[in-house]
Length: 230
Ligand SMILES: O=C1O[C@H](COP(=O)(O)O)[C@@H](O)[C@H](O)[C@H]1O
Image (cartoon, rainbow, N blue to C red; front, side, top):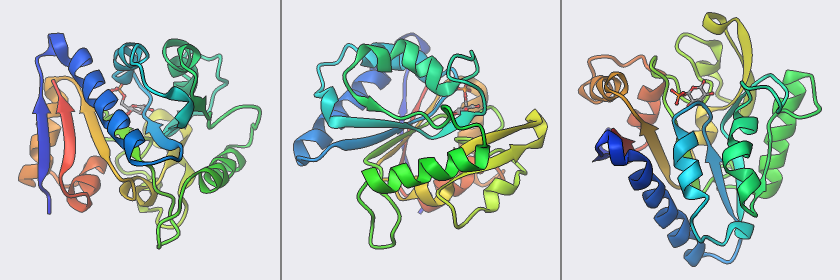
């Protein structure tokens, strides 16, 4: 338990290296099955250049469903929309299926519940009844948050729902997010983090100096979590 696999890169080749690791993983997974793969992406700034690089890969994109692990409650056209930002640099350039968390639905709880239903219809369920993503690419904030599971938010305690709305007082806003239950059931999880501040968080998590970061629970309950850092 609490073991990790660490790939540390120089900042200048982080984008290419991480993109090629993701490409290889997706390519290997596609060879192992005839069904469509289900991949969930984080938002924020870190994945953007990586996805811009990944779009050049010659993968069988038609066999991939892409989901988002979290979303801000704004229209897709808003500069804050995780889906909108990824769509511009990645989804609009490839032939994959991609699913937004927030579209015409304005009720945040309803949008979360519809996304949970969508995931249940698209993914294979484990024996526990929880859908299994083939790959989740997790970002991490400078406060150790993952998806929209922020420190000291009520969502950290959500043990039932798979996708839900989480009020984040420090941002004074509602976010839609995957739960721990859904994230932890994934077949593969990569944490992608750039910057000294995030590397320090990773070290604190594994040295148990600080156990209260939202990422800590993933590190604790997901053995051999793969970290791609610079
Ligand atoms: O708000 C968010 O932040 C985290 C980290 O973003 P980054 O800009 O530091 O890469 C991200 O993983 C999450 O999906 C996003 O909504």
